[in-house]
Length: 315
Image 1: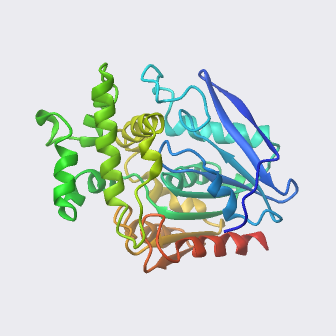
Image 2: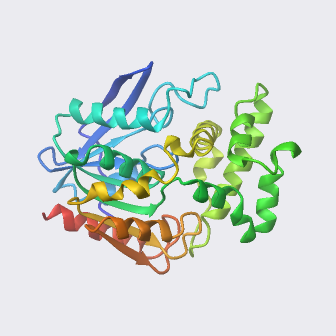
């Protein structure tokens, strides 16, 4: 990765609904604009994202999506209203940020949930996108969410049983994401924290197949944990606030936009079939399978992503 860098500008952008989103710009102010679309939902844009870009070639824009990171108000507070935190709101925020920064078109770089949000933005605003570099690609279909919350129990049966048993018995055969969403909004702080811990424990399990995986240290932070689980269950329970399968059906709208999709063969959280289906409908996209890669981790994943970003830097 490139050496650590610091932002040359940053701020909080008022996007309405009582929300202010944190943004920052790094690298070359005259370089090729690129927007980082972080995952989660609720992970926030960490400094490591800056290091994936050649700072001499790119004007790197990072932002924290509503309710997480340095954006305000923070979803760790159970009183924060999530009804104004949907995919439509996030897409509108991205457009407001683009206009605020005076950017005409930009490259989108995202992973996991961030790949879904980037695809949704590019489908809605193809004239604003120069290229996409996505990894650990997901499309937030019902099939994928059922896979993560239920079907993956076939691979990790003991750990999944603990995850399932974290919700009331009456909810165990239903929508587990929705059940956890109710628990993390419970009036009792002990109930909320227990549910957040159980969800994060399961997250650490199903992203763990690639060699060298380490549990996320951020899950030890109760504030991060609370916001992350509130947001991810809010989005999962609502299929990412998108009609089921829309991102795959709309992939043809991306014609003319070059893209690179980097996917780990061992990505059990986001199996490679979704990225493969996207490239079947999106002729300008190239799929790179990293045989030893997992969900954003594993030997070769970072190298493949950096190679794609370096390739577009030279265009």
